Image 1 (cartoon, rainbow, N blue to C red):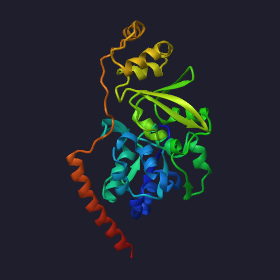
Image 2: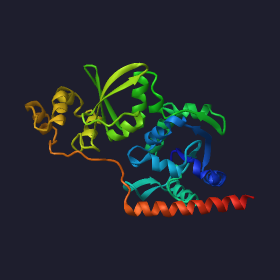
Image 3: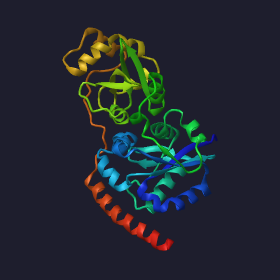
Image 4: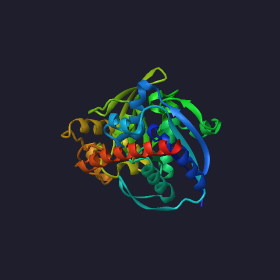
Length: 317
């Protein structure tokens, strides 16, 4: 079995358990690097939104129970990952059970409420570290001293050095296809709202945005299946280049259709039929909503957190 890397993130309000978590991880995995990250105070909520994306709708509330300020990152190597089905917030998923179970153990230690985060597979590790440090994250991690503090905002909020830097980052951030057509960049992605959060863009009903990269403005168009901009299965086909060239020929017609669903050209209709798609799909809201049950659990966990923190401090004296 190939070695795999994962990260554990201890938010500020879980620092009272930092040493306990670090010792437990060291007994189960090989720790590659530990370091602190401090986001700028003015961008903290934007950074938190960039990191979690659609997993949280209210970043102000999120910041209250994870804590603002310095947080701790532990990168571990698992020489023998065990992949099993686990019930997650996205339904039943195949995850590294050794990592996943540790995350929930540490959340129990810190009173719940997501005060400890971990990646649960290779894809999420790449996503999280790309958001935190950029596409060259392993080089940056290897260059750090143990427990060094990194003063940086998330990659999308901090900005990009060039268009190539932007493209390289998006390739690791999630499953994206980048198309360039007559000066406009179209990005077909899993979730447009996640990209809006990551890039610090205001939501748009037109799917069009202006993004400044290294002092130059670029016109960006974002399309995704999660919001209903695209029919189901479209991303997979364009990602595999099955419809990439054909779509570029009808892209203008397609964008016109999104703005007015009665505008369906013959060329667009023929493209959709030929590739097994229909134009009958609805816009959706991908943000995870808190249920009444979730609210009650969060309030209960807050009381538990205060008790555990007090208990830990008392025992440390």
